[in-house]
Image 1 (cartoon, rainbow, N blue to C red):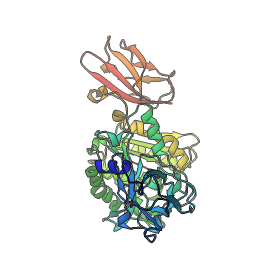
Image 2 (cartoon, rainbow, N blue to C red; image 1 turned 120 degrees about the horizontal axis):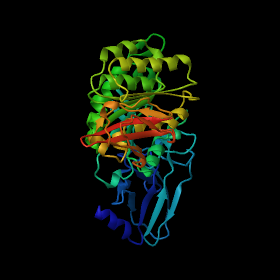
Image 3 (cartoon, rainbow, N blue to C red; image 1 turned 135 degrees about the vertical axis):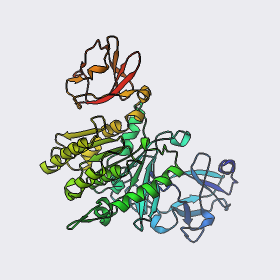
Length: 460
């Protein structure tokens, strides 16, 4: 690394150091970058002109010494002309030009790559990367692009993080790759981080285009296809997750591992989380396509509750009576199997439609509920006894279990930033007025001489 620093700042007069100051956020982490131009017969993958990384993690290349005043034309590539740099809107750009003299250090900005589609520049944040453009899926004998979001500060620390696995990766981080709009997962988590919440690593798995239904539907539908959902989940659990845990600073235990998806992605999330309760402890199921196969009901009843879970279901009021009824029926089925009200949360949102805009708007609340013990700064809840709060969600008054209350117990309600918004002495009163709270997710703490009790509720 020291050598790279030396080369950047101590070039000879007839040399020049080219430094890439900014790259598209989706640039694959492990792929080399080359320079092709009039000096190497425009060879896009010339290993003699491969850039290296300096100690600031920026790509650079010290160009061979050339006569002062001589000029070159060039472009940056990732190894071939299908992956040459492009303009911010995916357009062709003129050849770059440079004239040697004075041992210059020159900074460049690469706005786009040719293999990233068209229709506007990337909207992915800087802490979103392509983990692999062609990650092999042995269970399906296919390859798939895999995205990774790392929390702010990941590159400069040694902390380990929970992981959230998400489907339909094309639509999670980047408008450029989505044909229907994006969830803005990266922008949302970066905002939550700036507000004081802790955020996880997110792994986005692209859907299989024409194989999307096949991979997200575990059972065969004679009209639509399907039947490869088990293989897809085996890939996620037995191939992808071990790779992620080995190569990134994750908390690999089930307590810290979750999954989320929408529509058919919601269906496969439901299936995968219940099937692999030893791997996943939390799941977000947005606008699930339960309608596509009656087998989901038999599967749910046969799989049953094996371990404690956090199951978050979401539906919009504009998605149709069938979809709404299916979600609430599934809520009841899961409740009948032993998942209690602290493990289940189902929400019907007025005006919500079956699209990325709706899911984007609901993502933050779902994440904060699913990962509450990690996301909040409050550490006391990890050593507490969990209690049931009703009703949940609540509009005005919550009810507490009467058998835990004493004369001198104190109650606190804390928002997800760790800020105390209510504090009171209970005095054997099991009803708490919360109508003054703004909508959102809250943690309730009851402290007695012997125990700390905690519960979570959503204020509507």
